[in-house]
Length: 523
Ligand code: BG6
Image (cartoon, rainbow, N blue to C red; front, side):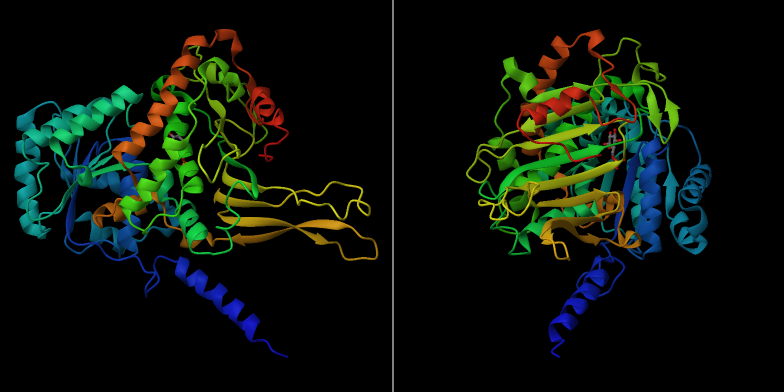
């Protein structure tokens, strides 16, 4: 028996697993970046604690930090370097409890420093940063490569960016100078444009790293590989074969401790302008001429330019919004949004939205993209599902009583990262029956690298592919700002709450897709 083919398949499977592990050696291994300094603004804050320091520890543990490297934390809080180190140690221990590796921490901790700053005072940048930086740069020989990570509330961006410019800290000398900016990038189109202008006064676009952490998720990065490294998808990836696409980001968590921010933002600013639109652009983009930051970002922006603007007088045909009331998550009762700490009892902030997006270009004409995201839904799930058209001629209709479910292809971004293709096959037996089967691929969880590890690593590597460009952020805002403003000006208090915590969202969202003769995938 010729088993060569099977061996090949198995071999390929094994190679794939090795290739997915970033600790691997060989061409797929992540490279150690050049020497550099990481300066964290907002070092006493939540993001530093939850994401940045644990990710740096992981990079250290996996041998992915350069030898010549140091971290300088800064914030308004007065504290010594020793105290900061202790705080960061308990953070890392908390994050990794059983797997905590003392020797990796020992290597990192001696490179961590802290110096308090007054964000508004220019002199403080000289004393607390410039002078200390140049001493540490000599000690660690970081070759002038600097990353300023702004892990601060957006209200402080302007001050910090202006002062980095005014004190010359934004300039590039022997090495690179990068500035990393977290979302939200603006509140609307005007504020995003203003922030871009301020950045431009102190930095060049190639120095600016606007984070959307969804872009750094392994499975999101995989969308490009899957689409453009396989010849079987591209011929089908268009209006001829695809009926519609669904993009879902559902969460079981509520607003948690972030009411101050969320009351102002709501789900459209928090999730759609950035994460949802980024997932959409990667799914819908044309093949870029090269796998490099500018060609990829060019194609993504073209998708935004092709999105049909929303008719504001018929918005309810395209957008459904909701806010959660009381309900149950994991069989435990939870509060409604208006009862959460820090939320107004008359709040009209949406915690759920569903949108129909039409892309007016050659590939997608007539293929709707349905997007939905919300808090306190039935399950935690991020996925992109591509729903193919039914077969053109139903030759089985005489033998089968049921309609045939068209094929679908699901990219599971989180959790249970992987993908599956739903096909129809004959059910074994004497009767002629069809049986939908799922061809499933699941990533090994322990080889996936956290989004923030990717963000930090790529920024050290001078690679902007996973970051959002100025025109991308503005184009996404220009589509959503009129929609958000119209919804905010027309919404009434008694419209909410309109879905129970733990449900699949409001009925309006069901109607949005059902009127087109389609159905959401179950949550
Ligand atoms: C953030 C939003 O950007 O993404 C949050 O502000 C949301 O509201 C979060 O919960 C979801 O991302 P993750 O990685 O926590 O699933």
